[in-house]
Image 1 (spheres, one colour):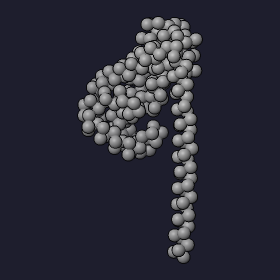
Image 2 (tube, rainbow, N blue to C red):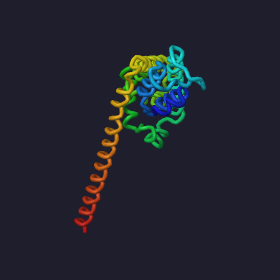
Image 3 (cartoon, rainbow, N blue to C red):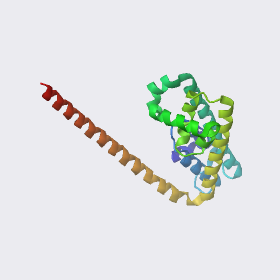
Image 4 (cartoon, rainbow, N blue to C red):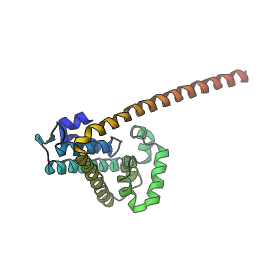
Length: 215
């Protein structure tokens, strides 16, 4: 991800944030690194539409790219939910880490926060990637949804890019700390896979035992 940002700059931020609107893409890391690049403290300079630059203009470009990319991705997510509805979630939701259970939780979230559900969701880690499609499914009014998403996205992107700008030359240490996330994710995948294999074997064993008993 950081390699993409170093080479493609603003365009990479735009695309990754659009993806993050419907599928978690580590938006915190995207905007942090983008802000660090814009500060000029790193060896790479920020690519702004083919021009390598740093400074205040680069910071604004990176924050706006994240804000607009996320907004457009959110509108696409809303359209998917609005036109696809529950049938879409049942058939394709797993590809977006969105099943009926998560949709139920999203519905409770919307009931709890009512008209502010979108704004609160956009500035809440993890939750922010699971607001777009449910908002469409629950037919959130598009104008209000767009305005609240734009506000929440701007707050998120400018805040994290600002943090990256402030970190500047300390980025190497931050990047090293984030690298441990990879190990945690891999360990989690292995643990879940082992659990599923064990459960499947136990189920097969119980099924065979029940079959033998019935005979």
